[in-house]
Image (cartoon, rainbow, N blue to C red; front, side):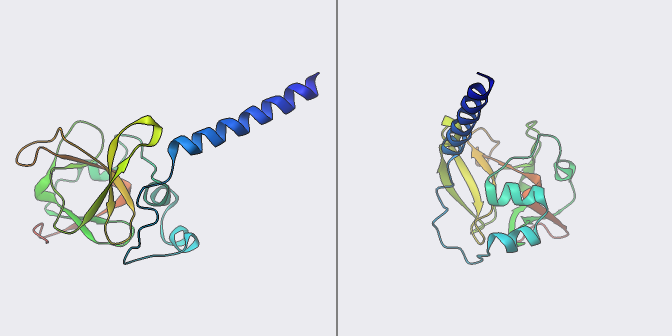
Length: 166
């Protein structure tokens, strides 16, 4: 009797994991070709485990954990995967959400795709050069765009200095 329960519990666990993978899905841009492409082993060697989980597996950091949340110097926020400048500090604002937020990316910096993982409809934001997942964009931001680019801080690097990169 105990053996049967163990087998049934194991099978149920496998079905649960399969269902979770199916719900999470894969990014819509997964088949897209990017300027910078690396093997998973190369990405793992380059990135920290947390960066890898976010940039390559569409993970999310816990809110309020990014050191970039309190970064207020002038400068540029770049992709942690390929160092492409993504956001100027001039567009960063305090959203109160626990993630670095911006109302506008730099020109030709990011791409977006529809994200329907976990049964929600959102717009995923990724680096246009390496495809790294950065976060999501919502339509509840400040003027002048009304957008909130809610970014995972661990997917970004900050470069202090001139913030008007294009």
